[in-house]
Length: 385
Image 1 (cartoon, rainbow, N blue to C red):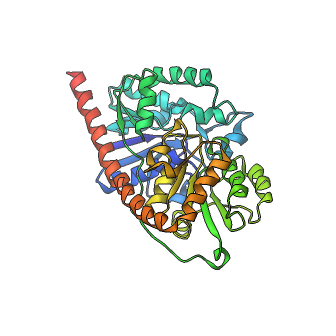
Image 2: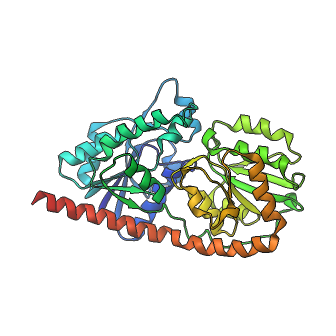
Image 3: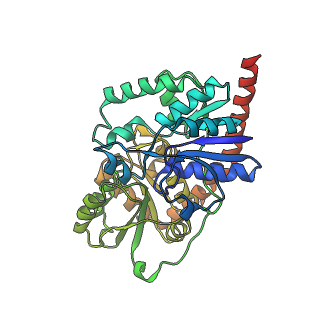
């Protein structure tokens, strides 16, 4: 198949949807498909990704007044360039839209007008978007957002979501497309691995979280939890990611004996560091899946997860010992101390978690995604008869 991925921001390592698109594209090519990307050009494509990917580039769309905030989240919007979109869609056998923004909306409408098979994905929760301006927990705003999104998503026969939680959420808000629950999947490099700690970490308890430094990710809860732990003097927090809350969290961390480290890592570096860690904490209030959490427990880290009712991540907890009350530093410290107090139980559960992670393999996810695309092609052909 000639598969066109439509996504505003493709070339970034600080955006889970973009990373998922990159990995799906590579795996689909390994399976014999031609994959092209319709996206905004961020001037880094040739230097970082070479010439081996077929792409259709449109210019960035700048949202004046918000551009700096958007960039800090590792994102940029794409503009509508009709000639480029027309060439991309006419090249494709099927079109897949990753986001519900102007580029995807226009492209899907053009694809539908030509009778081309077209699918979409729901990766970005409205709660996440509104959290950027501190409105992520205002229910009527979220309900209105889902209502408006529904109008576009219901134009598709097939929609991909990364978790059962997101499937339920869309069904509760009246989405009528066939919803395919397919994990974003983890690469085979993320597997049970333990390495001795580097000299700067010897004698310390390494606790890590991977994710954008953003309001809804709640790294602040982890920082505030450390003083409540009996192991406070030994805990070294490591946050992997960039984001608008960097300065805030840097200042907040100054109260700790071991000030948090903020790092931005390539995949091999991330794997090397995860293999040295003692626990993984995912404190986010809102997640459609949290692939970084799966990668962590695939490596053999017991996760401690915020039990939020607007997050899919609690599904990964194998029992209540890996859950804490969202936004509650004292309860997070309790959960951390439990695992540190019981090293034998932790060692046993590390292997159980790593085994559980195998069900989320990228290879399996792409196979299911491929089946969804073929189902859309078949349905499209049937509709034309």
